[in-house]
Image 1 (cartoon, rainbow, N blue to C red):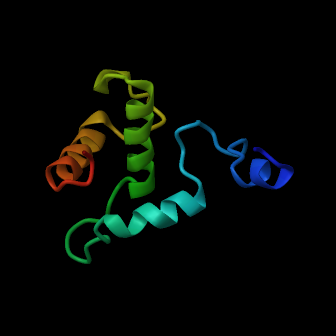
Image 2 (cartoon, rainbow, N blue to C red):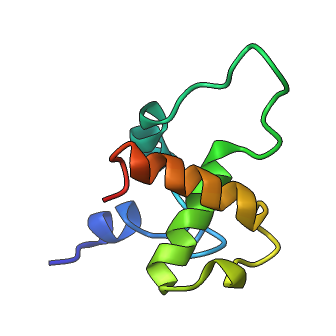
Length: 91
């Protein structure tokens, strides 16, 4: 049963999209991804935004081509998805 406390705890009104991650959700997922490398060029896109793009596509059942321009490029999101899928993170 929803109470005022639980309703406030699970509210997603401050998020831009329903598939966006809260800070608490990202804190759970972040350790599952590799830290930025100190060698080579820095990441152009935040990893959190890439994961949000993957969740946006999965939640909506959309094709890669339907990724909105507010997210990183499709090739970047697809590469991270395939890497995590092949490593067993996305099943």
